[in-house]
Amino acid sequence: MTEHLNVLIIGAGLSGIGAAHHIREAFPNRTYAVFEARDAIGGTWDLFRYPGVRSDSDMQTLGYRFRPWTDAKAIADGPSILRYIRDTAAAGGIDKHIRYDHPVTRATWDSSTARWTIEAEHGGEIVTVTCDFLYCCSGYYRYGQGHAPEFDGVDDFDGRIVHPQAWPEDLDYTGKNVVVIGSGATAVTLVPAMADRAAHVTMLQRTPTYILSQPSQDAFANALRKIVGNRISYGITRWKNVLRDTLVYQLCQRYPDTMRKFIRGLTIKELPEGFDVDTHFKPPYNPWDQRLCLVPDSDLFKAIGSGDASVVTDRIDRLTAKGILLESGAELPADVVVTATGLKLLAFGGIQFTVDGTPVDIGSTLSYKGMLLGGIPNFAFTVGYTNASWTLKADLVSEYVCRMLRYLDEHDYGTFVPQPEPGIEGAPLLNFSAGYVLRALDEFPKAGTRAPWRLGMNYAQDLLTLRHGRINDKAMHFTKKLSDRNTDGAEALPA
Figure 1 (cartoon, rainbow, N blue to C red):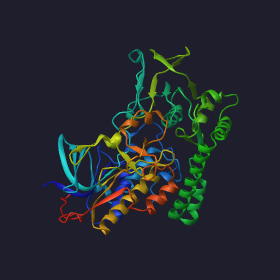
Figure 2 (tube, rainbow, N blue to C red):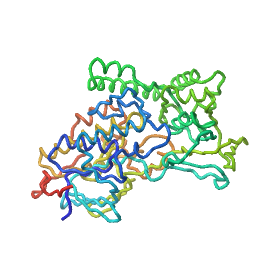
Figure 3 (cartoon, helix red, strand yellow):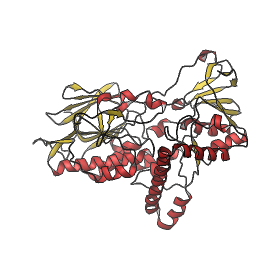
Figure 4 (cartoon, rainbow, N blue to C red):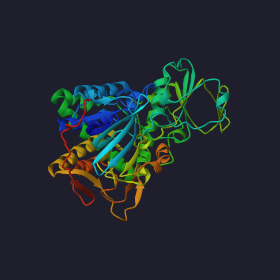
């Protein structure tokens, strides 16, 4: 007998644990499980182990709405975030529902039974379960491999080359020259973190990035917490930060030239007098065409100012025995080269979807409100904001899923499916010019050019739409529940 679950969640990272909490709280009698491809809770925050790994968003918005972040630091280190996720899972008993080393490979929907059949690999065998609702919280990173461009001369290099996504535990860079290739969030984290032990760290970038400093501690949040307690202060600070970040984003979109000058002025104040800001910290694109990088307490700028780190803007010609030869003819000495060159994306963990015998081409599907897929029944996924904290959207998606499941119960429906009306044009789901996004756009669903198929990137608007908006709109189609379906989980086998 194949095990049956009411809800199957894919991924035990930040999104998946949050989703499990919402499902458990809303439907305590329903059966659920979390299938995790790796052997641990935490997703990104368990995978990345490079020096200084931390959030690039404040934890008042990256944290769950239902579980206040109480540490003094708002820009938190990776181990603290991982502990927060694991504590959340343990507090709700969610950790007892996680099946580790269960990468899902195939999901097949059958309308005649109104069920998904899920295949996962475990211990060299195929594990099969069925479920009423499939909830994909696998993120969009390819966890097995990062993006690593091929450089000429790699075999000539006498030192060590590492990628942040596969950081080796035995790497000792004490007293060595380190070159970090890249200028994104990972690079600006690594450079100051490695500078205290390395002889020198150079951030080698092809194109500059907008970088802003932010205090690692939120003085307002810490003071308010002492007055009104954790929960109230968390909610107030969360909204304060949402409004602040939304304002910055909107200003960048509407007044890009003004914001370029503003950010440039802040950068000049952070760096030593006479530093060539326009070469190394003046991107050719407008602010928020790519994600702004945050550095806590000016740590990157301080490392540059102290002489422990430097920035070089150039292109790589080749690697040599002792370093990196640049197109300008200069050569950077290096004992260790860190390729912080970006990530690879993977839609829905690479799952192969089939609906009523027809394979689904994910790249040709339309995304409904950025969380459901046109033509695919009883399915939801989480993709967070690119211009704000991931968890803001993840929490809203979970709330919507619970609203939808409750709506099905109230109206005796068994299935729902959004169906695009004719004439909707497709647009990129992730409307973002970062290289790692552009390399994988064709593999992801499309967003529509009008509601409800247009992807929202505004938390306040999404809050109204997903928490309070209509469930039964013109795009949504429902089917009555099959008479022999038991929605209380009586058919489920023990976990």
